[in-house]
Length: 293
Image 1 (cartoon, rainbow, N blue to C red):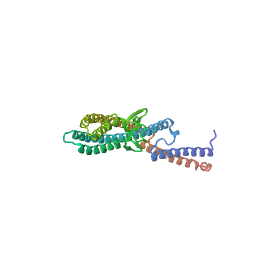
Image 2: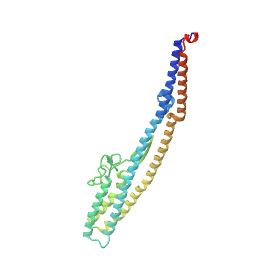
Image 3: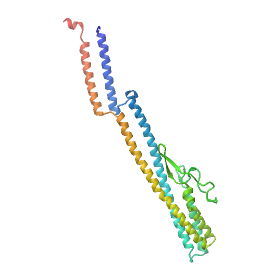
Image 4: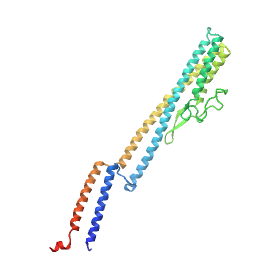
């Protein structure tokens, strides 16, 4: 094979260009902190990085769902505690007006307070949360209760709000208004006392006390369920945090550059490039005259 000056020149330039590209790639890795700059750098690792990124985005969505659910649970717990306070006051009024010291005047005045407590209870049932009603169930855009309706609602709220905490895993966040205010008998118990006070009927006022006690116990059961739901959400949230850390570590191992190795490679490539330039300059500077001297 005939070796010419042009062949040596072209081959030297090609080698130096290759060295410059290697130095440039190493500099990019160091400055960005990423080993993979393009998918072609490592197709298999790039595919795994994209899958890990998608999983991390999904985990962020699940985390937001759980945070929202925890806020709903706290809001519902506050409302139910307020309902328990109302029932406690109603029971106190029922006992006081069933005594011998009560009369028609005190019962009429007490009925006014009980009716006011009824309005407060209905308002609790119609508590707004975000852009919907906390106890609305699956129909959260409509107010659950209407005090003008015989059963306090033309269409009682039903269904429970579910949150997706993981793929195909749905958790209950809050109860609906039927469970808290109707099935417990809370609104009916307050209404019963109001009617008995209006009728000035001592016997029915005494009977309403038992009804209030039963509804109070039912609402307490609902309140006790908050602890289980809150714990479930907290455990799931902790699991998501751990899974996110694992995914981030996996993603980092795939794409983050080993800075110490990258700096060493860059120094080595710079040395090779400088040596190639020196050797090329010496070879390319030689002519036939150099040999004839």
